[in-house]
Image 1 (cartoon, rainbow, N blue to C red):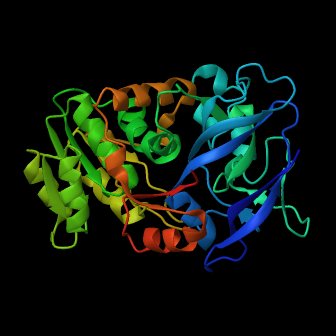
Image 2: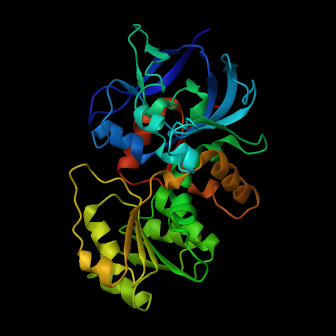
Image 3: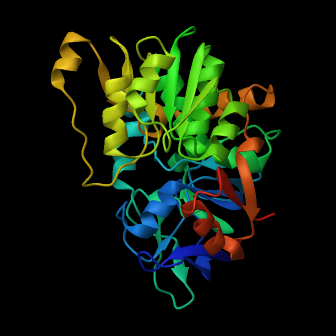
Length: 369
């Protein structure tokens, strides 16, 4: 039976999102319907509204959510009515060459499921009956959402749903870049460029991993102050620092062992690579515009054995990593509540996106119940 729900919809690029009543169809084979409790407002959603990430319109936004299962389709065995789940914007088929070699974040099915369910179909319509696309097979910035079981992860029932929502994108991306992609070693030095939602999680993960020096870099003193609370031992304001590379080398006696670029800027990628010490690793976490470029000197990679690598979704293994992150939170070792700058009702979604674009939030969250 279909459900009527309010949802945040992008109908036109570079225009405010609209809040509309939609129809969400019941799940089919290998699908579930979730009643969404909370959905993070992420830069990736913003990128879809301004064309940085190309997706077909009209588009129901949202990919970072937690909620409860209210309907279960045929052939679903691992998830039951009433279970708590979080969405995963990367669908994990479990069969492709990436899933079977421990890299489900690069799943071939997930790469194809950009604006519909993995089989290319949709379960969402507007009030006129016209189909609505869904962000990364999710479209969870809505009161209800129907998803394939490959796009959800069951979570423990004692995990609060509002902070749980953040794990499924921003937290996983930042924490995973440190734990999974770079595998930061105890006693090392780390620099993080960009102290937004993803950068703050890279900062706290570096501290948890045992880094001796954790340097946060941003243009906002407010964000740098927050970074200190998340484990940064030093801060640099890129707006006032004349030579960021020189400052990083000075602060770390030759350059950090690891530098995480969490802004999405080719220029910052260049500086991250230049700043790291011999044998160091620069990790590209931020999503740059498609036509942005970075220029590096290959000789640095050869003679100084520097590494430049990307990190997509924190190199996540969601069914293993999400529970691990939740355990760190419940043990008091990882901050989630402190990431949430403001909560919104779904009717306030346009304001939530305006606040995100203006840099006013570490993370805004739309709360449904």
